[in-house]
Image 1 (tube, rainbow, N blue to C red):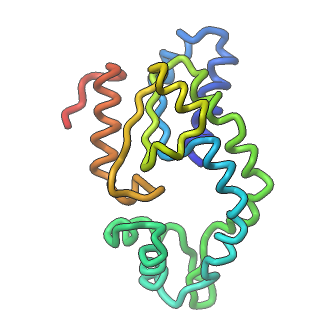
Image 2 (cartoon, rainbow, N blue to C red):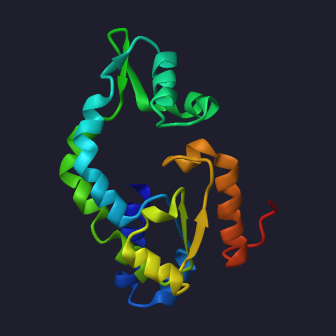
Length: 188
């Protein structure tokens, strides 16, 4: 979802600035992690059942951490131990999800509709990091074949690339920054 928000924000900045060169001074690159309009829109059809299958509460943080790993949402226990607690809140002795995803339902389509076009239309270097290139929609596939953005494929990860392989993702992003000279060379 964050990639969709970033693409829309950068596109809006380009449109409001009236000149791509103005935006380049502020936004020097755009990297989106494992989101493509086509697969995101398709996934929305099953989101209600996915949300319904999530436990509503846990007896401990550890139980929630283990659920995230066993369900496959996060592949690595160490990552789950770092990120899961921030997604919980304690209420009357039990741990519940901090965010009720069902309440965000009215916004889902708006987040992802037009994402591929938004991403492709910004006039800064772009990177798309995916876990599975077959999830790319037609517009992204054609754009990649035309060399309009850098595509990186993260291996041995699920949808939450940043959780499953933070070091690997960091290397891909640093490689993008260095390749496009977005800032002084970053060691890595």
